[in-house]
Length: 77
Image (cartoon, rainbow, N blue to C red; front, side, top):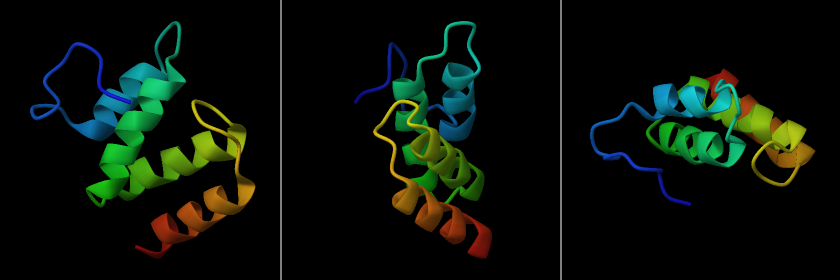
C-alpha cells in the first residue's frame, strides 16, 4: 500500500495516519499504512494504534494474537 497523493518523505507518519483514521469518511487502509510506518520508526503510539486497528479488523484482517503482541511491545518501550 502506498500513500495517496503526498510526498512520504516530508510527512509525520503518526499524524498522517490519524488524518486518515479520523476523516469524515475514514480510510482505514491508508491509516494502517501510516501507523505501520510510524511503528517501524519506533513510534509507540503508532504501534498501539496499529494494534487497535488489527484488533478491530480496521484496514487489515483481524488478528487478536498479533494485536496483543503489538500492544505489549508498545507498552514495554
